[in-house]
Image 1: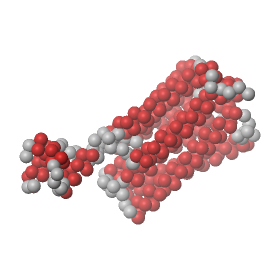
Image 2 (image 1 turned 90 degrees about the horizontal axis):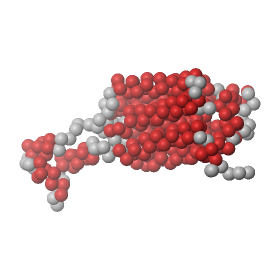
Image 3 (image 1 turned 30 degrees about the horizontal axis):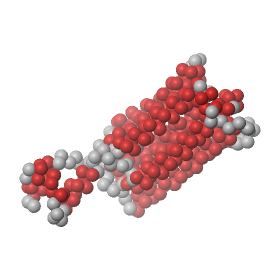
Image 4 (image 1 turned 60 degrees about the horizontal axis):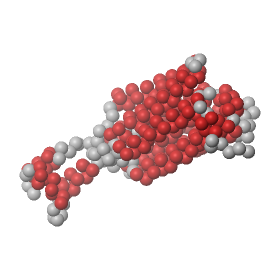
Length: 115
Length: 215
């Protein structure tokens, strides 16, 4: 195979030179957002008089923080989408369970073993 | 050579030239199916997350059965140390992400510096956790105080062991990087260790609000 043909074969497949990675500026921004969200969740839990509202807000923040770490810091947004879907579902399902467990605890009583 | 001819090259019964093999290898590693690290570490991560998920469920069931104990429990905990540990672990995840970013740019020395910072962050976490357990002990709180503290100690100590395991893993890849340097094309082990460390951080993102913040 001639060199011209080899070059054409590579270019026809549109091969990127390396995998997509986040810029340093974006990684720094994600870190600042994560810190801000953590402090916000503590503040909301301590200061919000409405318990239900603070529980929902804190659980919402858990889901956002999880998604930021999974997509941006691990970088799964650009990688295997099956692994990403499983990881994200963990951070969508568990916060919902937390909301149910704190606002409607009797829903979990069916699993409790009586002494 | 047409595009169709080029795409059919792999199906011909002739030996692959080095350029074709390279092209196939690059394409495999640039699609969205690329696994960060290796698949074994992701099986381990799923197993760990399942374990913690089960304990979160147990926490919710125990809370439903013992509402008073679980309402009073968080008020006796040192919320500041929990918040400090959250900030430390998020920062350590940031350090690991910067280390991976550096190695993908083939900057080994920079990568090593970020890995050292990750280890220091892990040590800071252990120090803060020891301080928190000390405060609990001074207040007469231990694993037998009540059901809330039994679960609290199980979850936090189990997580602490995972942090120590993560530190050993990061320490190993750091030591290896001095002997057999990672490159931008060969850093699967480093990426696996980084994914495990991120998992430790992700679990704490759940534990902190569940035990310290939500009432």
